[in-house]
Image 1 (cartoon, rainbow, N blue to C red):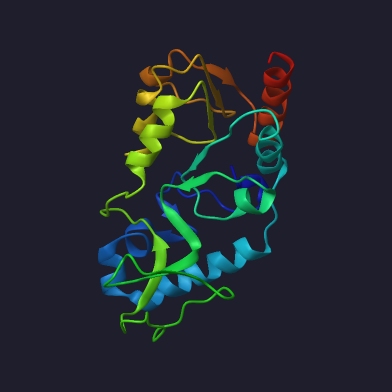
Image 2 (image 1 turned 90 degrees about the horizontal axis):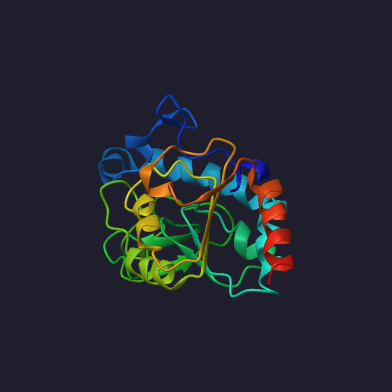
Length: 218
């Protein structure tokens, strides 16, 4: 969804995330081994995201709020949906523009600027870390996401390989949805998508076409 804003996708075919092993920068073990590397990695990425702008796809979803009750469930950790104007955004994998306490995960803070530094502590004197759900950690918002999917009339899946669980399993809960779409130039060949209408385009162009169709057929 955010690739057209210049933000690299999470996982490349080589198993690396911006030239880092995913295990080194997106796991509790990686944090315990080298927290300075992890902080630096997310600081650089946070700076990139602060400088990025919402693309046409983000803006289309914001416009759709004028016609539908739009609930966005995203695996992306950036804030581009919010900056585009979307009001209801559930971040499954956390938010890079926030920090949280290492020892007290309920303590979450907005980041002023783009850096978390070693020695930045929460009010209970615990080191702050990125507010990101890493591999091996629970996804605290998954139940809320399931409830949204179960109640939806129209489900639109945009730009995901549907390989990262539990997020990929959300499509199984859309039994009551009257219309289901997947927008991606390379639609995954998955059994769970057999009743989806494929829109083989990028996020921005695909969402624009789908919005016109949905609004015209209201």
